[in-house]
Amino acid sequence: MRAPALYTAAGALLLTTLAAAPAGGAPAAPAAPGAAERHGTAVAAARAGAAGVRFGACPAVEDLPGGVQCGTVSVPLDYAHPDGRQIELTVSRVRATQKDPHNSKRRVPRQGALVYNPGGPGASGMYFPLIGALPEWKGLAAAYDLVGYAPRGVGRSAPLSCTDPKQYFKAPTQAPTHPSESYKKERIAQAKAYARGCARRAGAALPYYNSLNNARDLDVLRAALGEQRLTFMGASYGTYFGALYATLFPSHVRRMVFDAAVNPAPEQVWYRNNLDQSAAFEERWADFREWVARHDDVYGLGATSEEVLRSYEKAAARLAAEPAGGKVGPGQLQGAFLSAGYYDDFWPHRAQALSAYLKGDPKPLIQQAAPHQEAAKEAENSNAVYTAVECNDAPWPTDWKVWDRDNTRLARVAPFETWDNVWMNLPCAYWPAARQEPLDVRTGPGELPATLILAAERDAAAPYDGALRLHRRLSGSVLVTERDAGTHGIAGGPNPCVNGYLDAYLLEGSLPVRRAACAPHPEPRPKPAAGARKAAGNPTR
Image 1 (tube, helix red, strand yellow):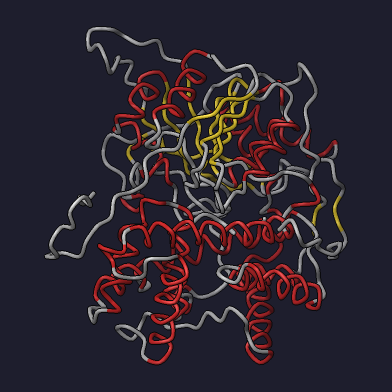
Image 2: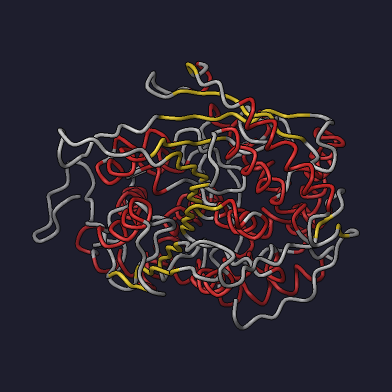
């Protein structure tokens, strides 16, 4: 499951007790990229290096301010045929300021381009260059051109769609933690229809939306930017194809940051990773409830985690009977509180909305949980790319009995997110395109420059074991852990210790020997309802 938003660029913007059955699927492509794809990438990169990127004013549709420049880079749809169909990726940039944020009279040497991917699959990085205005990023913005882009399929980069965006947001919806057989049959039918829609709308191009091609596209972008070696930061899913890049093109790497690392082990991609993720969300959901319970004097949702859960379930039952504003049912409630599992910045707002709803005021909950139709096109596009990439990347079980068995077991101990995660990924059981076998991410001593892995110990969307696995697979990598914290993506966030390691690496090439740890950033402060009397000792954030 993808992250719903990018923590770092917003500024403030998997199960050990369950062994999944071997995943089946359509005939798989070769595990390692063949000579044709290697040659095609070299050809495309050479062409891009000669052409460069013609940066200019951004189109109005990108909704970017005047200080940001935009351009395009041409890449082959199929790298085995570099002279065949070409697609264009949109790129954004803000040039390095070369101004020392601590000394306005000192000029900072430019170090090239820092390319960023926020994850997904299906997320766009076009807004990334704006991050240079934040205090935590000014040092990096001085030394680097900040470069974002929309990966293939995303936004205006050969956009992918699987269904009519007007039909994408259906609300209100249910979210049963233990679904009935009839409900399961309904969702299976929807998954089959969605997979057919992807095939119908994408046609012959469908198999080429995958992580290996995302890594190849990254090398073409590197060449187009005039960079001999790539400086790259990937978050969440961006760490996965970044790791593929490091495996495929180790000599093309200058510096790489993996923020909220996904487990790259071939047997984990992607079915088992999603099982692990559902299990981890249960723990983070408990963290949130415990925080709410500690602030019962503010929210009145219960003085224990169990009491807070009962308040949530009471709200879900009430919404099932009468959706708030006609749009917020149990499904929308679950989606809103799932985001609290990604980012603790959301904790005060979600708790305040739940409290207000149970006290008779549904407006905050409607504001936070109701779908916004104006965002339907972007959301549908993002979900289409997510589905295509994950389904194309690896074999998935094609027998519903496997999904039903594994997730029924998991839901007994992790009910909060398990079945929602199933429904999101179930089209992969019925995917019409051939699946690949995942590349074995691994580099030997001396093959790759030192890289930096950042991880929060209680990250639910990218469970910590993924960072440990990536650390072992990339020789010479360094792992920095934020202890007892669970924000999904910690680069450039509220932890100065983490940011110190990030800046030292990207600005100076300096890293600890193997591992380092940072204390957690402070927990969010409670936020009472508007007009409510501030509780003593509980100031608002």
